[in-house]
Length: 343
Image (cartoon, rainbow, N blue to C red; front, side, top):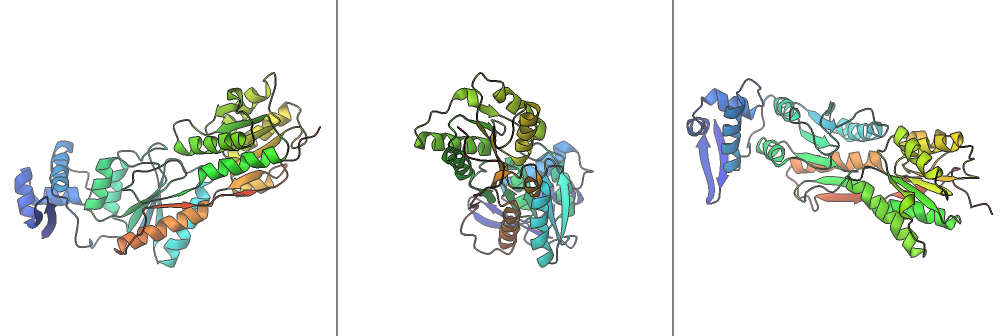
């Protein structure tokens, strides 16, 4: 069995036996590492991986065990927008006679360290990850096995060498805030997402830009960081509504947070939109069924997933990919949770 290894001087051919000799292990051990087997001691696996990385190894033939699978990896599968992403991946996978395997792992920033062992064993057609980054060693392990990967990135800004699909978060924040300003609101609160996520900061920057363009100051007391969940939206909204000068409108950085704002308004005896206008973000199906129906920023989650899989398949087919970063447009959907400010 031959491996293709590239070094700084050019391209050289090396056998599994030579890799095993350099690592001081058996040929079967090198094969186990290549195929993600767990019955290899961690120090030994690390030594073999370092050799593969040093020589920029890329598998040149497809494994007979390779399955027609596309792996979709989340850090939480129970999020309301996860189903939109799943449907998008399934649409393109089905059209290409592939199945989808779902994996939950890690934090919102990167998958957990145990995930890579499983994917190397499954050897799917490719991997779609809903994270903002990938550790360097994980990228190298996937590339060395010729397993292409693409990040669906509503959360941040991946490294330039990582193919990704995202959306226009700054424009979304701008459009939501501008709509509220056009409704006559001047004290506009914002509950964005976690402070360490770039999408949260981009939506906040869009909010601040809209305020500045209208000649309004963005009161620091009206800016709050949430967690994209209902309870977080409720808690932050209660804080905003308890201010001596509460906002007359709130822009929530997710539809789930907006639902929390609606509940906080109800508990506080406020009518939406008569006493408080509310804008969400994402436009998940639930948004149109809230009471009142939610004005929100449409983030094309399903299309983002479809584009990610299409990019993945182009990379796998070794077609020319003109850009590694695709950013889709957002748009404002006006429903019943916003209204002109009553005098």
